[in-house]
Amino acid sequence: MFICLYSVYMFGKNKLKIFAALSDSSRIRIVSILSKGELSVQDIALILGQSQPRVSRHIRILEDANLIIKNKEGGWVFCKLNRNQEIEKIIDFVCERKESDKDLSSIDFKRLLELQHNRVQEANDFFYNQYKDQYYIDSINKYNDQSIDEQIVGILSKNIKIPFNNLIDLGTGSGKILSLLSKLSNNCIGVDNNHSILKMARARICESELSNCEIRYGDITKLDLAKESADLTILHQVLHYFDNPDSLIEEAVKLLRKDKYILIVDFEKHQNEFLRKDFSHRRLGFHDEQIIEMFNRFGCKLIDKTKGVSVKGPNIEELIVKVWLGMKGK
Image 1 (cartoon, rainbow, N blue to C red):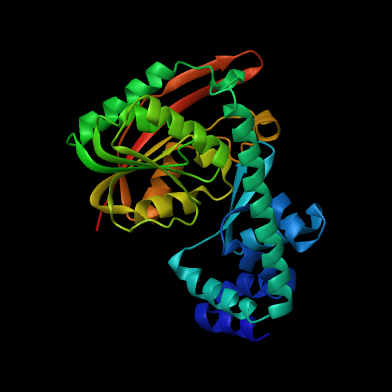
Image 2: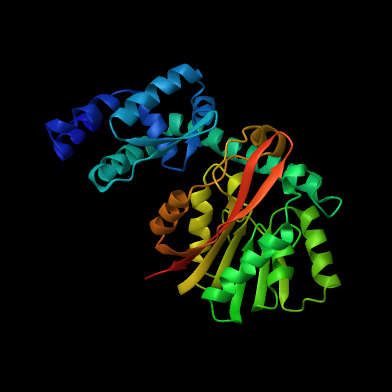
């Protein structure tokens, strides 16, 4: 009741939809777990232990009150908090009150952590199966690597003075990006959390005698690296494996010095729903507007992008691999 009265006090009678939306404990729980990042409707239902239709009804009410924003991707719907300044205070207040509810919050956040852990494990297993023969074996990755590599090198050479000092590749995998860009940077660090894959990355670096490259084990969602130490951070074919890609961009931006760069390589928005099940994709690519929004949220601006390279195959709707380059401001 106090939360509801607080919302009316803060936003006036015109915000009675917020009053109604936050009068239900399940909807308060949804707002609270979404404070930790974007989640699908299926994930929210799993965390709350409620049916998907029931959760969908709660989400419609929250959306109608302008508390959350929905993003439809194929057969999935992702939800995130609306951080509009007008309602940000009430969202923060609700989350603070929910944190004090130890019983429910501990259950919800425990389930959220388990869900995130399982997703990381699924992605790691997929990466290992793909990399174990030291090359991709699935049809969607048999695109023209050379064309994409040329676009990556081209966009960097066009916008950044070469050589730059420090490059950090997040989710480095087999070390492909390090070997591609080692001549453009004085120092290169690749970070990944799969020991089996990192063995192959180290083997590649050693075989190619790339003395300015270093491979490190680490969690790219919680980096243990010096802040504001990099001239370029890279997320190459990484974002679509995560429910909350903006959290990775936030981590990547933290590593950058002012006026330095972040490079994203990923699929443009598409409708190949089977990639979720068969290839552990969590997001079906990204619109330019999504990349721009995530850049802006963390103090960056888009300064260049490529047209992209088309990926085609049997029973596959066209995929386009694009490159986006952002710059960190003040």
